[in-house]
Length: 231
Image (cartoon, rainbow, N blue to C red; front, side, top):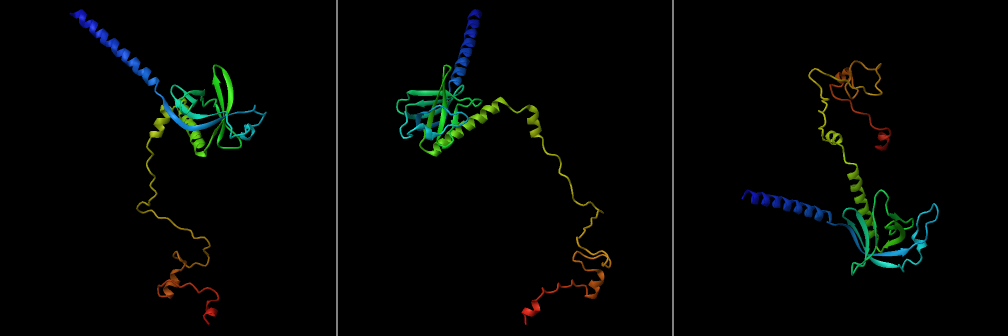
């Protein structure tokens, strides 16, 4: 009886391990679609001239590509650019995308055309790629940029010290209010100290002038020429 129980426990343990391995394998095989364009054009391009970038105008008649089809950017264990038939899904070409040595290069004379480096079993080839709409090329760029940011964020995760410093609360606010018994003075530029008779107020009137005018604030004189205009 005990032997049967032990065997059942072992079998259950083995089944659990197998299930975990299967789930991990399934997780590894999950694809994430980063970008898809229903139609891109592929061109044969001439060799790159020394010290110059690629130009789409050098590719010949852009209205006659060598291939048209669908482009997908797929992330699994790595990121792949897949050129496929839009109807059958048949693969035309593929290339990995590595942010540390990008396989995509923009041309100098257009925002809709790119040069793609294809790699397969150590062999390399270069093709031109074009989008019909600028919005498609913009979304293509954004997809690669977003993946590049995530890629380098994984390579350089924030250290625990950096996280702890970022989580620290700011120190207490400084209190600049006046305490009981404290005073402060204001220095007014242009004040003639020698002509002042005692302490004046902020408007520049002295205690003597206030008494002479019955304690009221003296009025400012009218602007020059006012009396002439009223005549």
